Image (cartoon, rainbow, N blue to C red; front, side):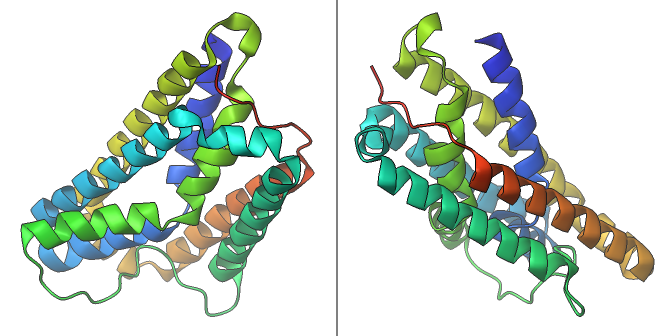
Length: 213
């Protein structure tokens, strides 16, 4: 179980550091409306993580355990999505997550709701919970449901910590990188390479989904 916890922590760290809807939204919101707005948005994102974890523990992964073709399709779709993100990061004219989008000022309730919606509609998070997380579960070491809860909790802690630091420091990082275009390119290529690596691993993985027990 310890190996699984370390494994999911490393995967979660790698994925949260790669540009995706959550990161882009939190950075843009923090820069355009301040740290407080970014952290309120993050609270919505964290609730989205919890929704995915709850659904996984209630047996959503069982569907993929009993319908292997659906599980394979999800992994291939996830790999394609990650490859698309990788291409957008490294292609000529690609943008960095620290080149924020202009967003209108919103009230706290809407910030929270938009953070939640961004997370729920984020394919990367769906892939993490429905495809990657089950691969770290070992039925021989104990109750699958408890393992799912433990692994999911580790993911939430890692993602919340990293996203929180990003939201707090987004403005300073954006200002630092704005005057250093070479650094922005390096950041894009590193993130693109990581995304591409995850995509290849996911596409070539031959493991099967596990049904909660």
